[in-house]
Length: 419
Image 1 (tube, one colour):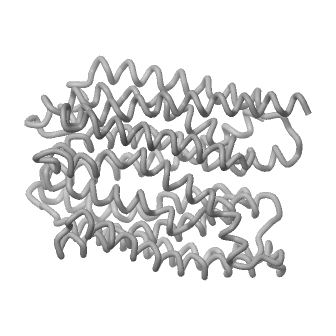
Image 2 (cartoon, rainbow, N blue to C red; image 1 turned 90 degrees about the vertical axis):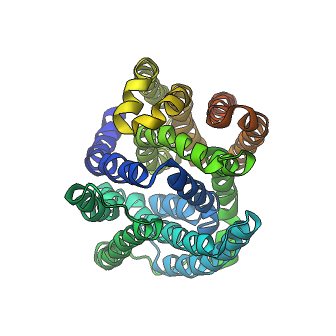
């Protein structure tokens, strides 16, 4: 069972390992070096805001769809019902996003840029939903292809511009616009292929679902998404608002966050495979405890090795990736942030299992605890320690939350043995 699962995960990781590091380090990193940490810091804060609210675009519909398709197959009427519902949620998302930008005192230009970034999230949400049909039917090759298609186009366009001219400095609007082009082309292609690939899987019944029924079952997943996004991303927004020169320190924090984001890509992509796989095996009554423990041990040992290397060579890593003027401020932050990688391994393994078990309110309780801890620590430490304060808040939050994931997972195992 482990061998079969890892073979599927390996294919996804290899495909993404070819493209996403090029996007993260060959495009996004170069963009920050070209525009400077202060300008990028505002972009990082704004894009974090759009990500925090992005669960409103879906309200858990994609997770619900993935599990439904994996267990019962594809239903065309239900599919179009969910698409219409997502259209309504898109309007709700932009309304709240603009209100949040106004409350954060964004000027007119910044609000326009925020709308562009919000459109990025809306496009990504729709693409993720369409991909969930492929993943639910175990068509991981197609799902993997579309997980990198948009970024491939962006890497080719922006990466080519950066290589062609060492003086080219794109504006935030241009940077976001090229990403939107990638999503638009990916969405056109995924809609065309969906009509062909999913045709043989059509089930003409909608299981008597109405939109309110879909949202009723999905909103707990959406709440979890918002809570998790808050304690993962609120530090970037708080850095810009709690201290003088906050945009600069947000940019410094972004340098370390980018590296962790790249490393956690393995866990994120693996979780996308684990969820439908766990759901299917659990529906068959298979005990997943041995598999879960093996997956955790593999991830933990790999993360521990990376943490040790990152801690020892923090100045060399930051100095190689970023402008020398930022190294003295950025490297100490990276030494702290890299510690959170172990907590992320626990998150991706155990939270995915609890999601497959439909222990969603347990996950919401854990996520709310993480949000509360992270907010208080950021509030106390950012004014005193700038980006290092945000880094320590993130590490401690990840550590405490990880213990909760492990506790509730093993509580679930115990309850199954007793029944």
